[in-house]
Image (cartoon, rainbow, N blue to C red; front, side, top):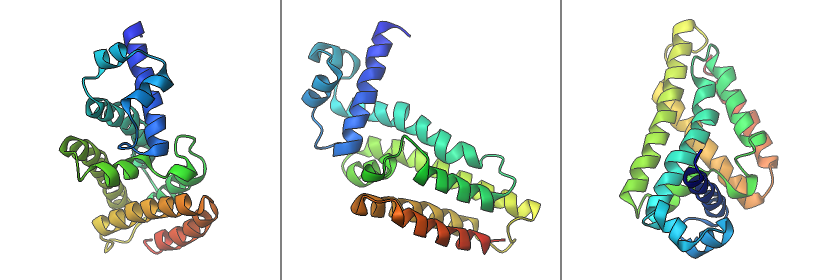
Length: 196
C-alpha cells in the first residue's frame, strides 16, 4: 500500500467509526480530520466532499465487511435452516464489527440517508438486494435438496429474516442489552424449523 492509499484507508476507517456511533449527518468533516490527524488538504486530496467519502465508506468498508458476514456464510449452504440460524446468531452475538449499542451500520445508513441522497440509496440497495437474493438462493437450494418444504415462499422468508434481524438490532440499541437477542434467536429457530 502506498502512503496515499494508507492515508485514504485510515480516513475511511476512522470516519466509519464516528459515523457508526453518531450518525452520518451529525458527523462533521472537521471531526473526521481531528480524529484521523490528517490535514484538511490531505482530506480533500482524497475526497472532494463528505458525500464522496460517505459513498467510499459504504463501498469500501461496509459492503465488503457485510458481504463476508451476511452473504458468504449462506453461499453454497447445504442446510439453509441451520446455516441461516447460525449466521444470524453469529451476527448478533459474535461479530466484533457489529456493536450492540449502535445497531447495524447498513440499516442505520438506510434509515438516515436513503431519503436524502440518491447515490447512498443506490449503493445501499445493491448490498441489501444481494443479501436478499443470497437468502432466496439459499432457501431454493434447500427446497432442491429436501431440507426445506417445496411450498415455502422464498421471497417471504427473505423479507422476514432481514426485517426481523434489523428490528432486533434496534431493540438491542434501545435496551443496550443482548437479552432481547436470546429471546429473538429462540423464536427464529422455531420459525426456521417450521420451514422443514
